[in-house]
Length: 209
Picture (tube, rainbow, N blue to C red):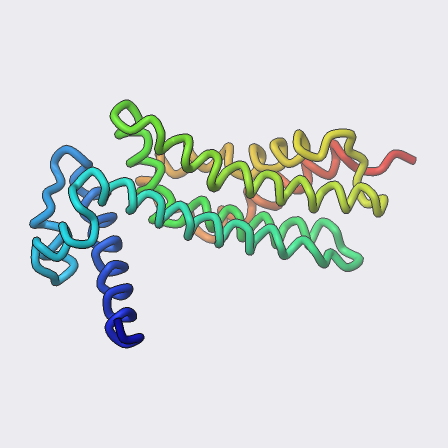
């Protein structure tokens, strides 16, 4: 297969996955139909089947693709903590805002709602997102916090637990305030939540005199 034809196949596959997510998020898995997905992707129904085989496989591939994107965005946010400079609160706030933005992204909300709704039928998908996204991000954050502790910026005995605490402080208020993703949280409100989370975290884990 020529590079150009292969690229076209990859692009078409991405178009189908994007359309599938849109339809699954809007209709739910049981009500979604492959012909709807094909129409939204601008391809023939047979093309969808040629790429993915059946609706269930397409659904699984769709969740996996969105999970990969979420992982990349969250890891990029955590990586910002590599350079804290002399202002740790500002550095943590910057990272926190990026993580909150990832959490509040419309696709992230839609993905979580899909998982909540379809987990009884696809319990393995919850494991996929937990092991494939949540755990690597938590580990990356724990590693950054451990480095800050070694440098004397914070006082933590268990970096993994500290990462859980910081994540809970950042994301805990978002479910209720967003009404489970049905209300957009304004940028200023997200910033206020983040600053409060960082202040609470640092008050708990500030170095002891």
